[in-house]
Length: 249
Image (cartoon, rainbow, N blue to C red; front, side, top):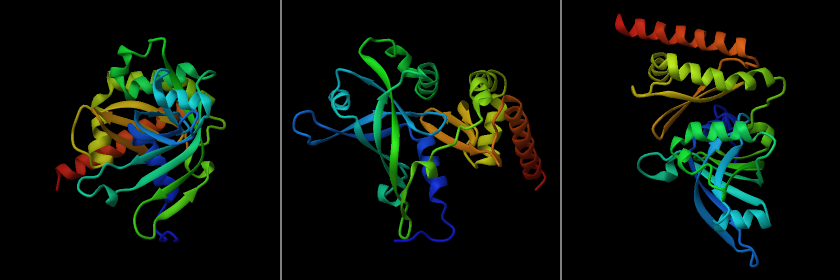
């Protein structure tokens, strides 16, 4: 089945990866190899790959440590018939986070602040799913298999941005919550709320109000802190312009 011409499957898959906070994780049972499925919380790495915080006492973690092949089902959680919404089945390998553990921890806790209560428990560890592909279903004529390079964000040349991300997120949340609300309401047509930034990457900004998440895509790629600041100022200007236009109509 071929997608319709106006359909951008890579963009939709990226959006689902960035916005999802829960998913169904499938692993292989140790010994039997039978499929085992469990509900997990997740966040996203700057490249979009899923981050998990799981206990070594859990069945799914024991399965991963024996055979790290996994699949992860994510969906839009739309009202009404859930089959009307888009979903992806991501396949890959779950690897314990080592080299970028601080980054992974920061992004996960930004998405799930309540995890602060148990993140330091000795049996808990961060895992990152390294995707090998995904199957996207988004309605009739919109069923597509994608390679990782089609739905992950290229981080080449973005080291400066990644280094600046923590400070940028803290600054936006401490000093510019009004701007975050403008992004949500004027650029993304969302309801007003207590919107805060949970992360940024070369392609966009992630926002959250409770369990409601949004993705603000940048009109062009950003790779350093200076470029990020200019982009956020530019988008704030666009949001204020829309606010002024709606006030005069």
